[in-house]
Length: 230
Ligand code: URA
Image 1 (spheres, protein in one colour):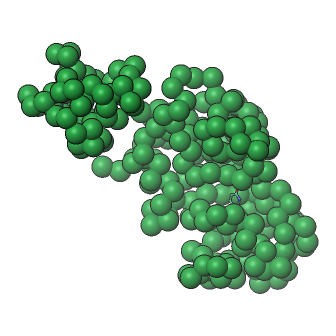
Image 2: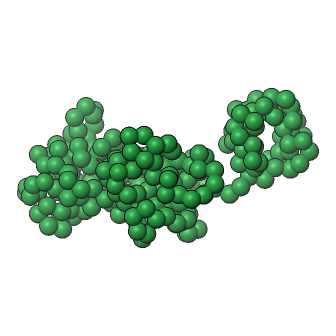
Image 3: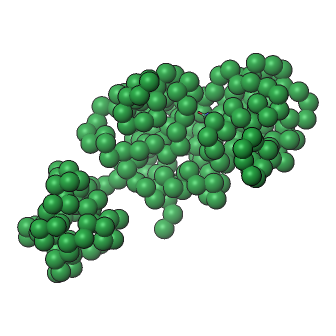
């Protein structure tokens, strides 16, 4: 991680305060004063500030059930931020691993661990996301096969990755995808002549939503481990 981030994660300094300390030569990495805040450091490096050894706080990994009418952003926009439901400190350090639209509900994972969220969001990692989808029209025959082959979305060069469609009723399905393109689920159904009227994310990888709308909890160590790579 960058040195300024390491300093922030081990002190109560803001980013600009941390950079000021680094520029003034107060931060020493493995016995050498380092003045470039972008220097990459590791947790096991010996890093001191004004002679005190710095130890970064552990990363945080949170699950929330996003209510409808909230935005996956750190600040309020047209709709209020879902972070208003999170009563913890240093919320500005957190980001969302896979954003949902304002009208979509369900499982969001929130963290300050960039490498961990990369494993959830990068399409090459093929991390599955399960959505319960309500449709405006009865599903026509053959759509499950089209989704399994891949859908050509408007404005995209490649087909979507194979997706699994489980029919619950003619107008309700469970869809599993491994990417997170902009409005992907809505665009996939639009491409086969249907329209999404409700969208709720139930599961990411092996993590299943188990709290009520607007509630949150920390992930268990085994849930965190599921998305961790060395
Ligand atoms: N696909 C969408 O279209 N919207 C979401 O919020 C998530 C996936």
